[in-house]
Length: 272
Image (cartoon, rainbow, N blue to C red; front, top):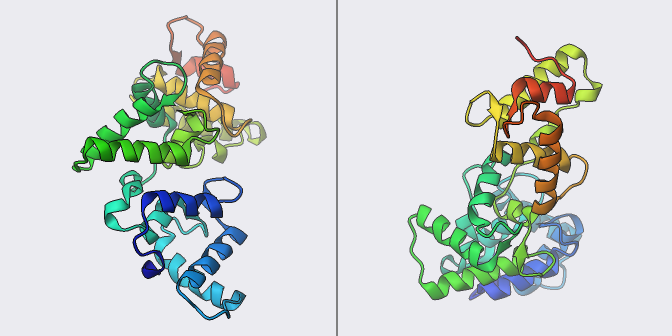
């Protein structure tokens, strides 16, 4: 497999990625995946019998090694691990032992690097994020290499090509897990089940364990709530929705949402 992509650099990798992620959903899957492995067989110089059976054999062999999430899809980090040489494999800087599993942690990162608070991450702000992340991994890169990494990441993740990363773009970079609230169906549950689920929800977003949601804890809750309705929202929309939520739930007007206040908003009586 590796010799099919000898001397591949980051720019060529990006071209391959964009070609095979035809529906631009951040994965290579289904027919896209078959076409990718057909392409690999062609580059390896296989005879023209790269029929479906042989394609499936090659796919099974390499997916068993590189599909670390075991979801039958290739993420950009997984493909980078598969085909990029070590000195070009900058995307592996973003691999985590476990994806972010709390939108509160994600919003902490967002608020930290959206320095001008304009609702998106610019190339300069992304560069600051990359610099810190590389240092956290105890690596060193030259200023020119950091510029290269920044430019490449913008090309991959700036979906509308406006030079700015939206919330959902950063969520892809940080490998966010599925929306925590997807596991709950409050409207369809009994009162007892709703109380139990409410406790789990509040505990999840009350990261600081203060008994109230404030700052990025409210941000994370709003983000997940709204993305139940619409798959992605912008940071500016999140800020507007946060103001609306506080207007409804923040009864004592302290800028926070106490447990009893959130329970009233959700129509659930919390446990004493």
